[in-house]
Image: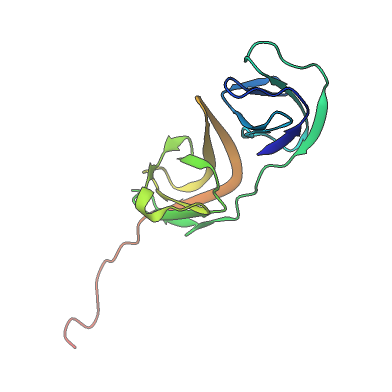
Length: 167
């Protein structure tokens, strides 16, 4: 959330625009001189912010703030079988709503997830490193972004025999 200080904010239809992204209903009224704007998923860097009382007529002041995306801390375990089914915990997953492994959607274990981590069930894939993309759901928009993390798919261990056959 970004706090915006100004004047003449009205309760009701506040909206925010971050760069070129209009976020209707994303403004939260605090007082006539203060409002909050929810941040969309974004890349690191400077972003302009404009606000509106009616969702149509935005300010043109070009106030800038530095946006920093919260980093994902890791994927554990970082490898699993090609047939999928591995419960993978993605830590640092605040506001993450979905995961892709090599472009394939994973099932989310809502019961195992919390505010700081997300548990995904790895889908089947071919052997090798699979880039992990994350889905930020923000208001009515979905935005997949590359996380910079990967999950290694491996062929299943094969057991051909056991010796001695009697112990």
